[in-house]
Image (cartoon, rainbow, N blue to C red; front, side, top):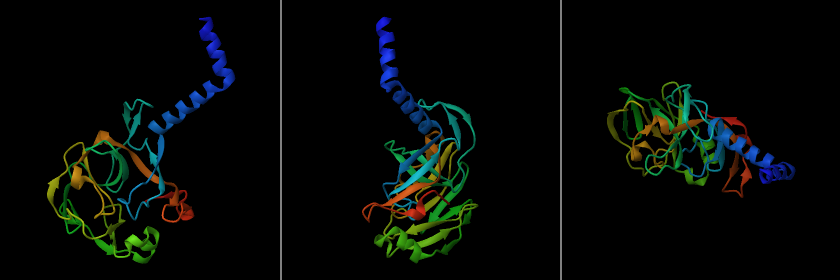
Length: 230
């Protein structure tokens, strides 16, 4: 017991105990309340750029026990148009995608144009010049369209040369969601790995903490700091 008391006094005096408690608190906060991640790929262009740092609301859908992840209460369900983080059904990697189909929805796709519950969505031309400037030279030949997802219109990119631009109509099963990347021709999403189970959705992306341009020596994109998302 004496050795344990001496060890405890050493922890307090050295500051190690405070550091450990702070790290545990931070890990608990990130696991159950809010988290932040860098965007490493272009699957969500033009909504999310490579180098963006996203903020994820872990309380948007569930209240979970910090660190353990046990669900304590349900606060809501993912909705069409939400940008979410989830675990890939194929390898468990963290992904960022947009919900386009919720349980019970009838979804189809023809020529990269979505049909939701028997109604083809409206598509309008977006401001291509501004979007190409934000994305970079790779987007010089891309087409940008505003996709009229019910209640949540947003811009998608059509890069050309993509596969699985057509999908026969299918019903989203209970407890599952159909997710797509906004960069329709360059996204590995539910067209490839199938539906994402409700329990594999970790949280809702609510905005950007900041952004660094990886193509220009990591220069800050000031206009993307502390910014909301659509």
